[in-house]
Image (cartoon, rainbow, N blue to C red; front, side, top):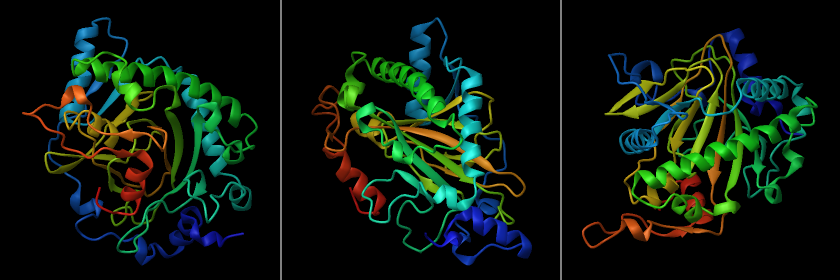
Length: 337
């Protein structure tokens, strides 16, 4: 069994007695949210109604949000609010289990994959840590699911996540379609280029415990997602921030909305027409923040590069073509692409 104090949830419990946090969680002044969050009037992340009968308008709104923001919220997306509530409930119950019961699902120390319960995700050049614990596991396709990392407690965890995966795929397919049509391509082009039916849906639960000094630390540092795009459900505790026009701005919480982040692979496939979004997460003093992103990722051996339809002599390829696993390795180890 690993040292429990590695887990932020355990560190948080110890930190409140001293009203301070360990040095490795304190960010530089360039990153501290109290200093760097923009407090003036800021534009709002676009919100898009996915049930809009005007398909042209819907496609235009999505394409515009992807080009200008790299992020948008969707409402009327077809996922029942009761199912979202259940997803959140079973995830929360897992994180409330005694520590040793969670460690059963720990990511093996020598694993090449991110699946499992864990704390540290990517190399930090300054040895800094983020105020978050997580659980990763794939929810689709069936051939890539490893139930070893799906909690058996609460008992309904599996049913709820399998049901959620069904709806996730419908939303994912719709978004792939609109992304393609928005650039004048046939509707199947993006999904096929990203792996088609082999596309992997990787769920992550982020658990950000209350923190005595939320002004000094971050839950997740500034990053763009590796994925094609990410479909995220937050809980009601705000914390997501987006970098826009040189400012860090807060994302507004809209109950039952899905937050869509454009990831690196769509930026690459679109040859930069759509932008992956730089974002980060802050934490809260008296409440636990949680979020449930699902990363839509290509199979690891698939080679992705700018789509041939989007490159020409006037508009040459801006990105290299490479296997998804090589792209991911470089990114997580902070190596140039």
